[in-house]
Length: 416
Image (tube, rainbow, N blue to C red; front, side):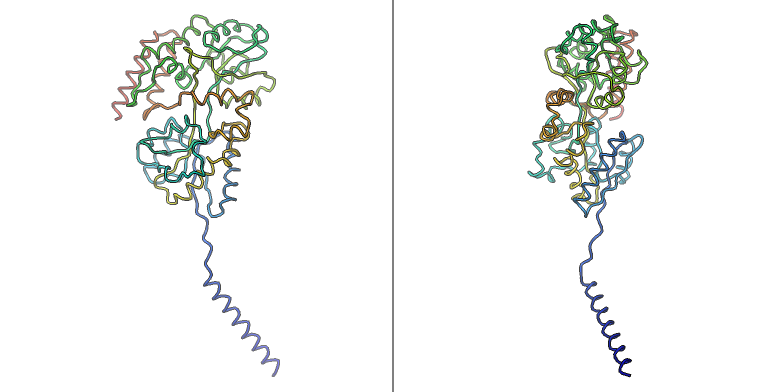
């Protein structure tokens, strides 16, 4: 009887204890599940994807209340982004190339970042020439994640073979070098890439413009034609330059790596490509030779931007500020496949002193940004098609450029 009562008493005590614990659990605040921020970019090379995954994991470890869902858009990136923005299904944060930025910044679909940026973020550390590509009507809509300028890549062995001891410093000197180098170790002295993305800096070096303030093409003006004539002279008169199709390659980097040309103008992306694909190639870089007594190059950059319809803007900003902050950017650009948009990070990583990258870093201050107003595809397509025909001797330069400019502007007018 006593044992029975004891068991009953113990059972009652356990029941009461369970009830008390249950009540306490009900009273305790429950931990909220992490907030998910959706991030989208295009598919880069495997190294780029691996690095981004690592940086995202570092962010999540430091921000356990935020989960990042990353999607790499495989094809037609901007078309997909624009469609999703219209359908209010766009990611919270996404890549935006400087070339495409003017159109989206004018559509009221991006969140201005001015009110999120605080002194701790240190906006002054970001290269001004990169940041200005993402300013619109006195607002900042994007923060650059990395960049590349263009520099002269030259074959050291080819130079030695003809007695050249240093890279050219003027375009006239480059033309002379190109003649000396043609038909020696390499078939041609210089590799030419005729697309507008590689020709715009020659136009601006003579005071020309690609587009006016209203976004209409103006590259057929006299100053612009002076810059483009340099290419024609070297290709047609000297026959010391070649484009990729002339030597059976797919890019400027490839024709340089295969010893088809002794010099080429390329970006930072060419360095790891050449080192991995052509490990025996001995090459160096230098700033692009002066054109019309002016330093000139291009700068290409991509920013992180925030969708104006993002449901969790504070968390989206936390992600952007980490990815473009000093810690995240150092991790992102530490392998050298891209150059950091922050001056302090470039110095910490030694890129401003690096034998191969210093010339690329030096060019960011005076570079022409790769940005062509709200209708870039129209301008690029018309220029590229007509300029190729000039190179091939099918029509005079002025005639072709006027045709390209007028057609582009008619198409822009029809789209407005």
